[in-house]
Length: 482
Image (cartoon, rainbow, N blue to C red; front, side, top):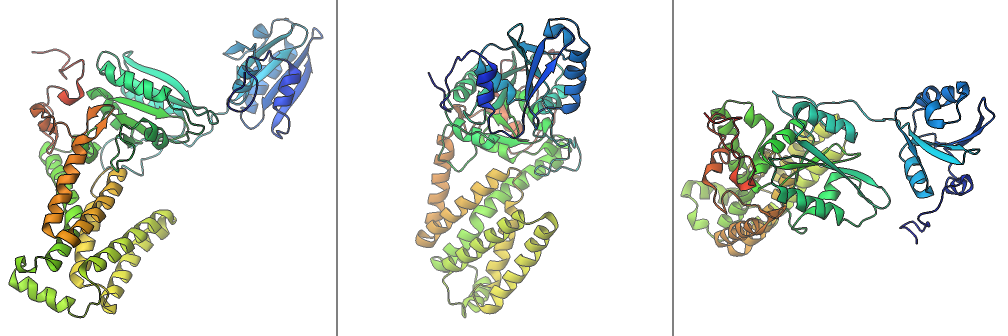
């Protein structure tokens, strides 16, 4: 029987077979060592994966001074595992363990000496806030779990570990609060992860692509975040969190459309201020979608609906333009996306300069060259700024694609096309699910109590129950009812 890499499975471990497995690996080390009782010890490890200082301290020095024949009693490392099969030995080797062979006793064991590479805990760059916690996840899975457990010091916080990717063998951890999170969500997530049959899973977004219910939708069905406090809040309301090794972004699910407009600062600011800011986000999302299509629809099909004074200005600004409103808008929106993407790919300081100077220079040049009207430049600028108010980056990209679709409908059908686009968007959102839960809840299906934390953020002392749409096992947020 062979595995995905063509190697035989269930092969008894021998030093000869293991030598073949590490052949042509420059960083593989095979060292022989004689103990005080004249036993021959062979150590095999990957130099670039282990902590050399710990190797000398926990393995080499104890072996030199030990007179006991039992390896486990000689080595001072905390965890020693006996190895019987070469496949398990290879797996341990590539995860930062050292293999120790006792040729006299025909015994092999592994000692975990993984070098914990990684950067320090830094401030989140994707979800910046003025007040609140400043720490963010790193690429170290164990460290990320620690950041969550420090905020939820309860034994009910459970973790389940999986391995995905036949080549990468990436560790994935599901976290949930037992007795609070609906077991249905856990079962669905567990089955989706276990059914992944792919060779490389390098990022949480790739894992989400295999777990989504609707893989061809532009809307994210998992909330990606690098903030531990966001994950803790999600766990506390009945969601589950999925952590992926070697990536600083966690996945929260199930979510709905409206969760993507919520920010960690909503629960830090005063509720009136937080509600105002949340309403501004919804208004900005609507403006970014409809402002340019509405301009194209009115100037192309419904100019009689434009007030007379504004119409005079439009006629004057458009009298010398060679392009129709649709092509004028399309070119400017595509140019804007090019500038935005270029500013993201450039180094930080250069990117900021490119974004500001590029937008001003291109806009001014387009007006002076007669390719775009001044009114359109203003509308494109407002639309671009409004799109940045959506806290979720994936949602802002979905917003851009929808804007182009509605723009095309507006160019052919005018205002009717815009209404058709809104209807199709609503139908699509209503058909989506996240872990089999309605994506448009609590609007459809309707959950009245959840509206207290939907378009507004109500006072915390009013939100006495958890979201009904998540079907938590513990309804009340208070430890006891009074």
